[in-house]
Amino acid sequence: MLQVIKSIKDMKQKIKTIKDSHLTIGFVPTMGALHEGHLSLVRNAKKEHDEVVVSIFVNPLQFGKNEDLRHYPRTFDRDCELLSREGVNLVFYPDITEIYPDGFCTSVIVHDLEDKLCGKTRPGHFRGVAVVVLKLFHLIKPDSAYFGQKDFQQTVIIKRMVYDLNLDINVKVLPTIRNTEGLALSSRNVYLTETEKKDALCLYQSLVKAQCMATSGITDTEKIIREMKKIIHTCASATIDYISIVNPETLEITSEVRNGNVVTLAIRIGRTRLIDNVILTF
Ligand code: PAF
Image 1 (tube, rainbow, N blue to C red):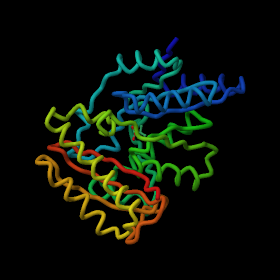
Image 2 (cartoon, rainbow, N blue to C red):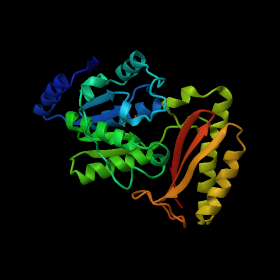
Image 3 (cartoon, protein in one colour):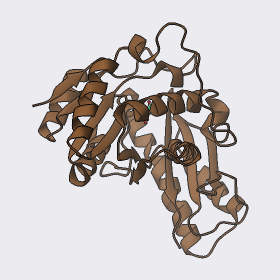
Image 4 (tube, rainbow, N blue to C red):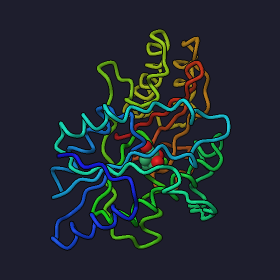
């Protein structure tokens, strides 16, 4: 039976019971509007742990002033139905005031990593992510926490935070789940019109091009990005926020592509900003 817990006090009690029984916890933090990407994280957490906790919290601190906080899809009943079907027993679904009581003024800054890539056009975004994830980690005390590779920069920042603060949490990053045509699943895909959904395939197509070029021995970053841009520019509704090839730990831009570098991009399709990436293997 799925139990929904809304208060920190009740959650602490529940976690204490689990820990007292020496059971392990797999944790999947989400903002709801669940799709197959989230469910693949849940399935892995279930396989690897005795208990799975899923949090559903649309975190206002990670949205910029002109971003989509008010319109972000909220599908709580459907989310619970999906989680029940996966055999999840425990959902943490706090109100905003539960997480950020009056006077809340603590910030978590993972310097050097937070202002690169997406951080350039979304200032403050990763501070918002880091503080809520750290709060959730303290509360839920998971053995492992599961994240999707689609949010690549987020995973690098969380891994760094966990390492720097000596948290005993295994951060697991699982592959991006795509639709049959290659579009990475995202809660924000619901904003796309049918035409935009087709245009959005240019993200994956440009990433595939980058992988093919690297496989064929081309290591000049500029050359690869030039060819990727050509693909993006064939889509009327697409505008480029950034396309970069980076070191997977430091997020530093590389001029010469190496095995394991990450091609990462943010593209606006109409008014919707989408992100995607691939880890180059050659
Ligand atoms: O990836 C997300 O959905 C969010 O950034 C997260 C990790 C749940 C924090 O709000």
